[in-house]
Length: 156
Image 1: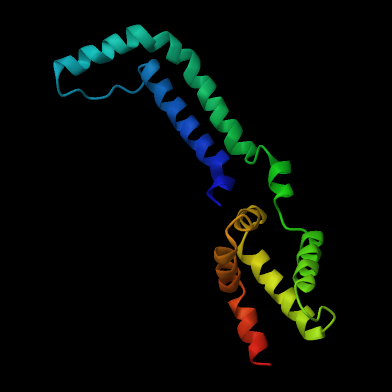
Image 2 (image 1 turned 90 degrees about the horizontal axis):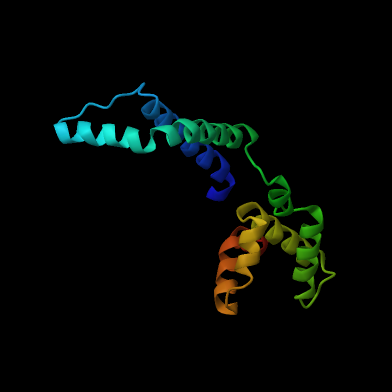
C-alpha cells in the first residue's frame, strides 16, 4: 500500500535534501554554531564539498521535482496489478469449481459475493501472496475476508 506513494516520498526527500545542500553550498543558510570548532568544521566542509554540492544539489532538486510532478513512474506496473473483470470471472469460476453444486443460484451468488469482498479488501498482489500461504492459514484468511457473505447466506 505504501509503495504506491514511493515516488512522492522519494521526490520530497530528494527535493528537500537538494534544497538544503543548495542553501549550504551557496552560503545562503548559515547555521548558528555554539562552538568555534563547529564553525571551523563548516568552513572545512565548504572547502571539501562546496564545489561538488553546488553541482549536485540542483540536480538532486530536479530529480525531486521530476518524481513529484510525474508521480507514478511505472504506471504499467500498477495497472497490471489492478483487479479486472476477467480476474473476477476467473476467481468466481474457481470458487464454483470447488463446490458440489456449481450451477445452484445460491452457490453462484455466494461465490460472487465472496470474490467481491476479497477484491475490495485486498490488492491483486496481496491476493497472490496470500495464495502462497499454507492451506490452514489460507482458509483462515479467506474465512476472515468473506465473513460478511457467510453471514448473509447463512441467514437466507
